[in-house]
Image 1 (cartoon, one colour):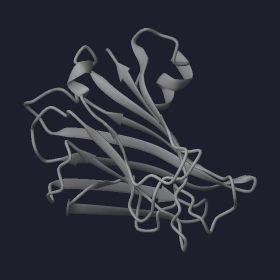
Image 2 (tube, rainbow, N blue to C red; image 1 turned 120 degrees about the horizontal axis):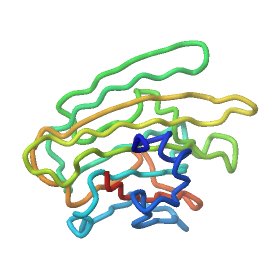
Image 3 (cartoon, helix red, strand yellow; image 1 turned 90 degrees about the horizontal axis):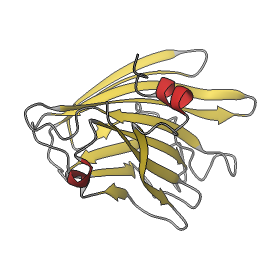
Image 4 (spheres, helix red, strand yellow; image 1 turned 45 degrees about the vertical axis):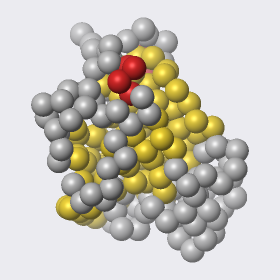
Length: 193
């Protein structure tokens, strides 16, 4: 039985199985507005892409959120769905006709900003399915969370798609309101089956 994508693949495969391969890593050492993985056509032997992100931004006044763009497209062709919980409340949101896939709700939650506790980072696992297929829209799903002392400050499940049916040749990940700061690590994996 194949290992499912996302969390179970990370736990079950440990990154050591040939069908789940590290392709690229971006380790941020100074403030950076975005990270782009380009030339994804070079990875056409993979069926899906998986991104592991541990991040923090320099937004000064509140938490930040991840925004994702395919192929550098800035038009309003993206749709996002979010379900998030802070341990007490559960909220949901939808955003249509936006310039990014927003992977959290309006409050951000999953990326710590400059006003948060020093050296605390949010984390996310993102699966992009059938990225090289040129005959359907591309869906992603994400699980993310952030610490709050001895508890999780928030847990988020989100999904999104871009309404153009074309192969994804580049993926850009950026904070919506700030820049990535030193210590942020974003890794791209390929999944063959």
